[in-house]
Image 1 (cartoon, one colour):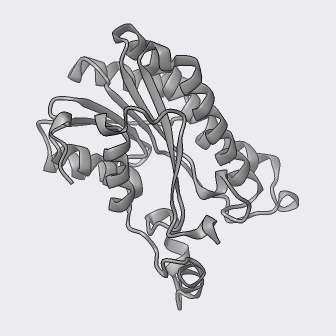
Image 2: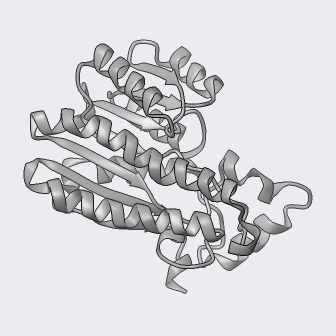
Length: 251
C-alpha cells in the first residue's frame, strides 16, 4: 500500500519496538515518512534504526512517566522539527483477569499504560500540532473497547476509556485542525499474544475458530488500516472507531 503524501512527514509511534507498533513504523517508513519510535524495549527500535538510519530515530522510555514522554517528544522535535502524525499504540494485556482476580497493582499497571500513557503522550504533542493547526492522532483501542470478552476487567475498562477519550479529543479540537480516530483490533498475532500459540496452540486455534474470518490477522494488516486512516482519503473521518477483527463483533 503506497501513499506518496507521507513523504517528509513525521510520525511519532509508541510501542514501536514490536507487534503492531513496529508494523506501523515499517509501513510509514516504506512510504517515505520520518518515524520516531518510543518504547521500553530497545532491540526492536535498534533493528529499525539499522534498517532506516536516515529517517528513523528513537528513545527508550515509558509512556507512563511524564518526564520520559517529554524527553522523547523534545528529541523527536529536535531531529525532525515537527510531529505530523501521532500513533498511540503502546498497550498491555491483563490475561483476561476478572475483577475479583484483579488486584490494585494490576489495575493500575493496565490503566497507567493503556490510558494514562495515551493521555500523557497526546497532551505533550498536541500543543505543537495546534500551533500549526494540523495534526492526525490514531489511538489503539480494541474490540474490548466495544464489547465484553476481549480482555479482562482492567483491559476492557481501559479500552472503553480509549474509545471515549478519542471521541472527546476529536470533538474538542477538530475545528482547530486536529483529526483523532481509533482502531479496534481483534485477534492479531503479535508478541503480546504469544502465549496463545504456546504448547499445542489450543487457545490460538479456538480464537481462530471463533472468528468468522477463521484466522488471526498479522500486524501489517493493522498497519495498512493506519496508513489509510491517517491519510487525506480519510479526512472526513472524525472520532471514529474502526474494528479490524475478522468479523468478531458482528457475530
